[in-house]
Amino acid sequence: MTVSHRSTTLRGRAPAAVKDLGRATTRTIGYASAGLRMLPNFLIVGAQRCGTTSLFQALAAHPNVVPPLFHKGVHFFDTPAYRRGLRWYIGHFPIRAVAGRRVTGGTAITGEASPYYMFHPWAGHRIAADLPTTRLVVLLRDPVERAFSAHKQETARGFETESFEAALDLERERLAGEVERMTADPGYESFSHRHHAYLGRGEYAGQINRLYELLGEQRVLVLEAAELFGADPKPWDQLLDFLGLPTWRPDRLPHANAKPSAPLPATVRRRLDDYYRDHDERLTRLLGRIPSWRQ
Image (cartoon, rainbow, N blue to C red):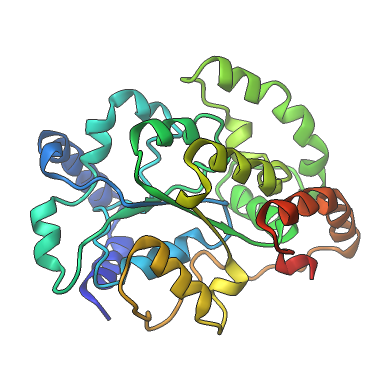
């Protein structure tokens, strides 16, 4: 196990009070030393519940990756924290000289994973303006399974009280006008847009196309979790090549945040399969390949 993976694991086990103190200290010191710090080379921007935490943990174990302290995701581009300015954001990342000493061969890189960036209407614009060379990684899974997993997470966190089917029925009403309000007021935070967009977050084609238009296709890599975390090494090699990282294999590809649950009822699955049919066809045309869940 590498040093970076071990330190990431220890941070994950730290008590909440220690994490909070560490974050506050990091922000204060980081802001003051922003000129000495690295800009993120990569952002894992989504989609939510598609394995972004697992991917971040795997990348953090790479000998050339130095992750930010105490943070998987900084959530700078999708929250009012954006008003604090780029210097505040850069303060979360490693000091260049320190990161360079931790890497024995090649160049050190850093990055973060904030899976709301892909869905947030302003995040892509902000990333394009503030990080002109940073590369974005998009991770996808079956949108039906993604929606069901998101509902379980929001329920466990206390952000959802409705059943899955009821939440699907309520989504249009809950999100009515929210994107328009967020677009008109960049400082507005929509609770339902962040926590109740079970269907919307799985409409992948529109979100990816927006990133393509804002940043260019060459800066956005779209992978499928089922393939990246599978036995075939090619998707992992493709990712490393995209990030400019030396060939390397993690001891294992973790599956973070995976929790067993009751299976999705067949009637609900058929409903969602039908809902996503047109969206998946758009995705096929955009990527030039049929997503694995439609094969």
